[in-house]
Length: 142
Image (cartoon, rainbow, N blue to C red):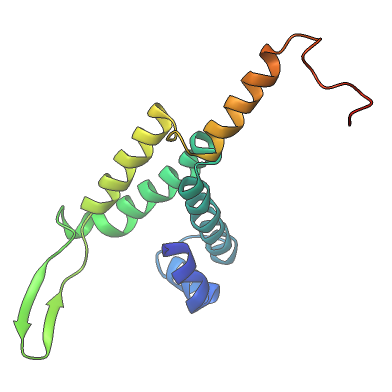
């Protein structure tokens, strides 16, 4: 969702944010971050290449935590005021970054769930590898 939000607002706006933070090559980093977040998020959502996708996603979380959120403390929700106009919140801390990192670690170590793409493909691959030569489909049937 974060990658899609960056894409919807325009990668150039995220690039200007990165430039303001002092990063070199902000346009490249903007697109790289957006692609990692969108493709990595879809990968996690469908359970495809979970362990592989977890690495760049974790890297973006660590960078965001250290360069943006750390200065605002731990809590991700800082209620500043509650008025008739609505609630007002402060800057988010690094709590959610740690939560996301924990989730990525759990997925990477535990693997995807039973209906994930990776699981289905691995089961199919194991089934094909355990078939004896007489059980495999003939060339004529293909």
